[in-house]
Image (cartoon, rainbow, N blue to C red; front, top):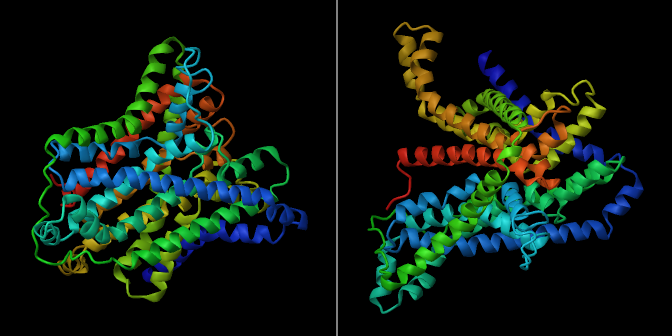
Length: 518
């Protein structure tokens, strides 16, 4: 009976996760011929071109930044390598829309440099969005390349060096072929992030599918075209996710299983100054500029801080994120248990893949589908926190599922059997045996969902009850209206909370023995 309940609960969770995609497909079948005509017209091709161009540019730029930095922190003798590894992960704590805010607050109309008379860089459009998203995403590529470099067989590099190859030649001929999997995985991850981004492209006025969908929802009575564009964006995201699964199956020639010594570090000598310049320049662009702009606006407008609105948004962010984390972890527990205990079952594999596929749905698509569902099928839920929390569960269930599955894998069935054989009740075994082993993984999954929800923007804009604001929506609204001082304080707090997320993740990896090594 209990196992039947687990199967039923797992199927219900997966059905809920897939509901937005299925609902959009049904909605597409109801639109009229005129909407389809517009969809297949030039505007959709423009959005497709601009979205793919941005994804390609950001992926290329992130790779060009991350690969040299990964080499410097793994295969060179650059002083302070370990500290730089941690610092280079900090840009993950700065959401893309805060990068957009920093660019506008510094170089836009009414920004810090406005009125100086000096020429200002063009921040709107393609180049501004590329800059903001590149420095939001390059740590993904950096971590992937660093892990791949640490796994490679050092004896191959030394053999190439002994045959007279220069460090650069050895890297190009020996190391790069071993990084193919890292190139594929990190490139797909960055591209998927760009496809899903809403905040930066909206603030910097660059038209992608996400921005066009939001503008269509806000400015048009008929939402048919927004639904069709959402299907197009969903198709791109599913292709990216499918590509990650396809390429993830082939690891390439890493030679990781052989007993070999670590690669010998390259001696930089006088060239170390260029290594320092690369690291510090990247940190300045990824963290220094946003934080510096925020601090300057805080000091310039200290007398105009609206603490009441700020604390209201902060409290709202905390409790809605906590609620979303709790509900998401609870909803994914049945499937996590089945995934850990019945991994060989074809049905379990299908359910798990379907649950992870929900992560391919960009947030604007999830929000739109739930808006349509609420208006047409459940009007009593529209404009309530139920749909908002449901959107967070659909989007972030894979994060909690992965952590919960890992926790159940740590819990050996023999331990619970031993507890039962010693006369312990089911509650005692759960409290004294299972919970201490499950708690770290469940808390980690909940913390990840909590802190990701804190930074979530489009679902909150579209689904939150009227008058409900969070730190993310307050930043976005104030920046969009040019009130940079009002956005400074919530931006600083959001970066601080996101930094806690990054530190927590790095601490977990370091405790597990996979952290960065000197």
